[in-house]
Image 1 (cartoon, rainbow, N blue to C red):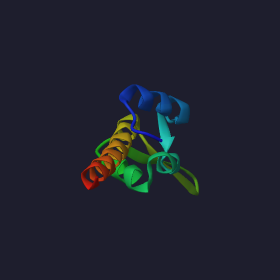
Image 2: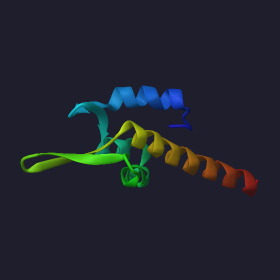
Image 3: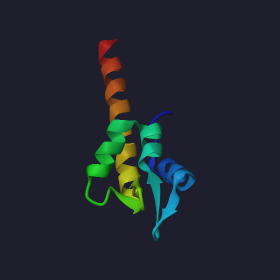
Image 4: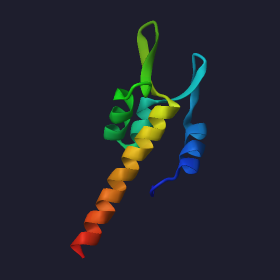
Amino acid sequence: MGILNKAQVDVLFQKESVLIGTTDVVPKFRVSAIFGEDAASFAQKMQNGGNGYGVGDYTLFYITHIGFLAAASFYNVRQLRDEEKMAEDI
């Protein structure tokens, strides 16, 4: 997957999101699969970036829309860092 702009990330969020409580969110394991575990963890640590929803013996950890944008940004910066490094090596 290449570098994404906000419109592309919003479409991806709409595709991957599910309703939890009263808000659309993306399960953290899906965010990890899309952007990587580092990006998902980064998003979850942000204020309002993610949380968990428990039902009995299971808690689903999720990423909010704000967190999803942060995870995508983290992913983009990593991609651009690698691109810049490759350009410097030429």
